[in-house]
Length: 307
Image 1 (cartoon, rainbow, N blue to C red):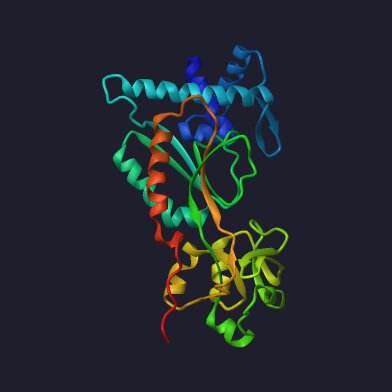
Image 2 (image 1 turned 120 degrees about the horizontal axis):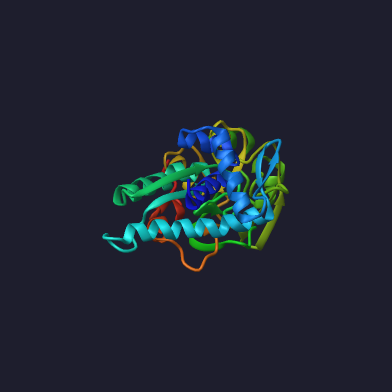
């Protein structure tokens, strides 16, 4: 095994945090992978990994080597693709991370279209509602909805996700419908702890900005679970319009407090900084920039049904 092959082993070990996982991917043994990484460390003269009880962790030198090695391997794959072929053609493995529900609803179709258009791409689609560390976890592109806590990444704004305040007709029938945002303090509210860790909702209304400390008996970090709780009549929620669009249109939930608008959430595509992004990344960013703004559920709410 040569130096470049050991670099590829190292890259996968850094991304999976496990020699055993890499061995399973390559149909080899864990000792074989460990031996090759040890050879690489001797060639470089530094320790690349710390072995912990929960898996592998990159050392400072390992993190630096990973960031440079990943770019070099991408460049090598791109170079191979251009020899005798169309220059700049997207090739190689493309790791994409996205919030679960949004990814299932919208991004999965885009990525399927992308690999059909570019068969040399190998897409790895990771769905999770947690924040991904783009650089440390080897993510090529990560979709984030909401604030950006990480200043070490390059952010491309793709669109804006409108938020609405909703409740089921059953809840409103038994508990009454609030007419002012301040009245939410007396209602059962379903809180997304990811976006509202302090249980505070903010609205732009006729009197300016209104901030309400809400309360309730159900909090979660998963938007689909919040939707299920709303449909079950458990309370009032603030959530993305694209999540509740069909429910509002079909009368399963009602948009309330229309004069009090929750702050919209920006949608970003993030990637690690670099001098030049590989074709696989630029092609995905181009597709996202074309498709995301076309999603109608991100914009104007449907009109309420006539009774």
